[in-house]
Length: 212
Image 1 (cartoon, rainbow, N blue to C red):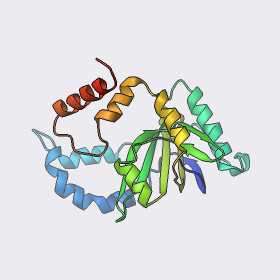
Image 2: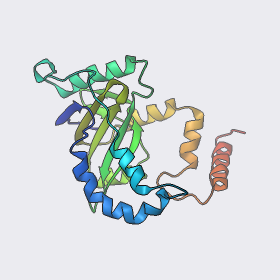
Image 3: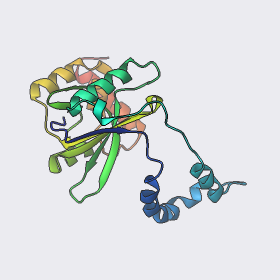
Image 4: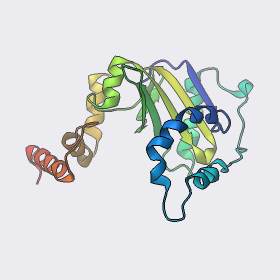
């Protein structure tokens, strides 16, 4: 969970500054992926030009400091409730989690928020997954919710720590059986030889727990 929330901000996706970061990636991406964009009559340059022309005007709302809550978590609660109550948002609980390895390499993935209170936001993961290992070495993370239907992005940064064993056990016990079998059968962030291996692991886990 993220305990302290030094920053909690909301804004529409930035169409301007992103270009500066993308420019640094283009040389390596061109070298690796150029061929994947080519085909009969296809043009890599034309495809990139089309992407560059995409625009969206964000006009659904505004954020004024005078009207925002003084406590970041209070403001997050307002936004989260709005997303949960909106029929337009398919997965309001989905968020991007960014971590950093010991050698400074960042990585991101989508996880699901499972709760929040005065202590911070909570999500669960396998401690042996890549994110679990990275957080044990670098116990800081960044989260981002992108509720595109509401034209809102919420960014959160802070220190991460373990939930209590009681909290983790209670959540694990609440998961559907299929989800628990999947957790037993599939080691996170590890290479699996084939689907047959995964199915065999699932069958073994089911047999060990008296399932047929």
